[in-house]
Image 1 (tube, rainbow, N blue to C red):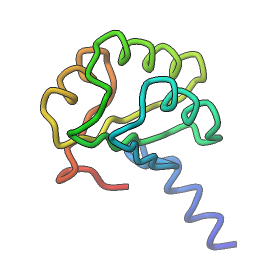
Image 2: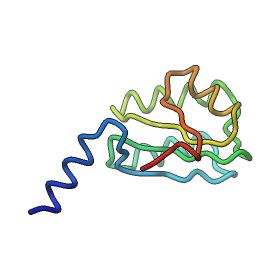
Image 3: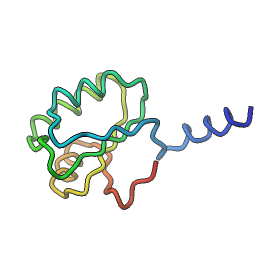
Image 4: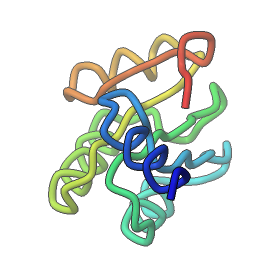
Length: 102
């Protein structure tokens, strides 16, 4: 019973993420959108490497739209300031790896 209570408390925390998805450098927008669709979690952290193919503002807009359609809250975690800037401009929650805690 204590385990369930702890899990509920963690999920009620505004900064707690239910699932972390690590995006590979070769993954494109289609793959990332599919992964987002197939996860049952509502609060997801996407860890994006600096060498990502996801550099297009249009790709990020499509990702943001899909997250909204699915009712998922997504945090973008990346050490790349350009990725964080694009994500932030589209109203994603953003974090650097140094400040992100699951």
